[in-house]
Amino acid sequence: MKIISWNVNGLRALLSKDLLKDVMELQPDVLCLQEIKARPDQLTKAQIDGFSEFKAFWNPAERPGYSGVATFARKEPGNLSFSLGEDRFDVEGRIIRTDYDDLVLFNLYVPNGQRDQNRLDYKLDFYGRLLDTCNQLHQEGKQIILFGDMNTAHQPIDLKNPKQNEKNSGFLPEERAWIDKYLQHNFIDIYREIYPDRVQYTWWTYRLNARSRNIGWRLDYFLLSSGLANQVVDAVIYEEMLGSDHCPIGLELDL
Image (cartoon, rainbow, N blue to C red; front, side, top):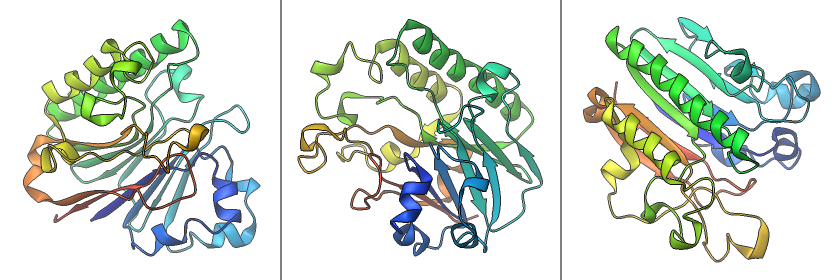
C-alpha cells in the first residue's frame, strides 16, 4: 500500500496549473489532501474526471474557501467517517477516517494555533480529542495510521531555526508535548524512526525565498501504531515537488 499526503493550500489553483501530475505518477493507493479550500462542485468536470480511478471522499469546511480535506482511495473502505464527535472540530473539515478491516487511516489537517490563545487552545483540544479516539481504537485491536499536516515541528531537528521559534506556535512546548503523548500511546513517527538524523522539511513560508534557501519546518507526518513498524518499506518527503507551501509526503507498506 502506498499512501501520499499533501497540504495543497488550495486544490483549484493546484489543478488549474496541472501540478498534481507528478504525485499521480507515483501511483498512490490512497491520496490524501489537506487545506483543499474547495467543494467538489467548484471543480470542473475535467478536474473531477482526473480522480476517476479513485473512490473520492470530500470533507470541506462549512466556511467557504477555508480548510477542508479530501481522500482518494482505489479501494472502497469498510467504514467512513468525517467526525471527531464534536461540532466545533467537525465544521472545519479537518478529518476523514477510512477503515480497511483492522487498519484505520486518518487524513488530518490539525488546526494552526498562531492566531491567538483561543486558537491555540482549540488546536490542543483537537490533539486531545483525536488521541482519545485513537486510544479507544487501540483497545479494540485496531492498527492506526495518522497522517497529514500536524502543524507542529516535534524536535529541534524538525525546523531550521528552533531557537528563534521557541515562543511561536508550531514549536511551543505545549504543542510538542502532544506529539510526545502520541508516541507514549503506541505510536511511532515513522520518518524519524527510519531516518533519525536526516534533515528534511515539508513546509516553507512564501516569504524571504525561504524554500530556495531551505529555511523550513517538518510539519507533515505519518504517525503509525507501533505494530505496523515491521511492515513499512519506506517513508519519503518529496521536497522537490512544487505547487504549495508544503510538499507531499509518502508512506509505503507491505501489507
